[in-house]
Image (cartoon, rainbow, N blue to C red; front, side):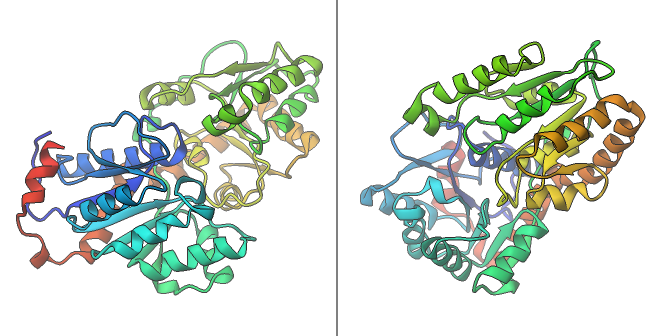
Length: 393
C-alpha cells in the first residue's frame, strides 16, 4: 500500500496474535494498526510479527510469523524487529511459548530498540511466575500500557514496578458505533458477544432470563460468537451444547438465541447498533480490561455487567448497572428494570455514549502515536533499506 507517510513517521513493529487468528488480541492489534494507518495516510511503516502455535495464512502487513517454541523463528523475530524504530508488544499470558508465556522475555531481551508493551491481563492474585514475568516486562520496556485505571492501580499496588513506566490508554472502539441506534422490532434485544467458553458467565445469564417472568415485552437474548478455538480443540462443541441444553431445561428457548458467527468489524457494528442493551455476565473478578464493555458504551447502549474491575470503573458514571457475580436474581432485576422503563434505559444509553466518546480508535491511535514520538528521536528517523521492505510486505 502506498500513501502519504512522512519520513518523520517511525517504523512501529507490532507483535501480537493477528488475523486470521480469532481472538481479542488479534482484533485489538488489527484495529489499532488500521487506526494509526488512517492517521498517517499509509500502513507502510507498521509491520506485524504475528504470534502463532502453528504456521497459518498471513494478513496484509505481516512480515514474519513467530512460531512459539522455535529458536530459529525467535531469532528471525528479533532480527526483524530490531530494524524498526519502536516495537509494540501485546501481552497476554496465553499467547507466547513457555510456562506462562515466558518466551516473551526472550524476545524482549533480544531487542535493542525502544519497546512499548500493552498488557491485556493484570492478575490480582498472580502465581509467582506470572508476577515475575509482568515485573520483568515493565522493567524491560520504556513504557507499559494498561487500558483502565483499575489495571494501573492493581499493577502499581500489587507488583514491584516503577509507576513512571506505566501509562493508561483506553481500549479503542470502532467510531462507526457512534452512529444512531438502529434497534427496531417488537421485542427488545439483549446482546452478549465474544468467543464462548467457561468463565463468560453465560450460564448465569440464561438463568437470569428464566427468572424474568412477565416483562412488558418478552425480550430476545442473542449470544453472539463461536466457541473459543482452544476450548473447541479440547472439547469440540460440548460446551455450547451444554448451554443449549440449559436453555431448553429452563424453558427459555423462545428467548435465548445462539449465533455462532465471528463477525467482521462492519457486521459487528451493525449488530451492536441494532440491539437495545448489552449484557456482560463474566464470572471473572480479575477482568481489568474489556473490549466488549468499551464498544458497548461507545455505541450508547445501556449495559448490565458483573462487578469486574473495568465494569465498576466505567459503569459508576451511570452508563450501566453493576450486579454481583453469579447472581441470576440480581441480574434479572437489573434487566427487568431496563426492559420495563424505556426512559431510564434511554438516559443510561445517552450517558454511555458520552463516556464512550473519548474511546474511539482515532483518539486512542493518536495517544499511541504521541507516545512513539516521545520515544523516538528525529535523528533516528532516517531512510533505511527496511523502509522499502515494509512498503512491499
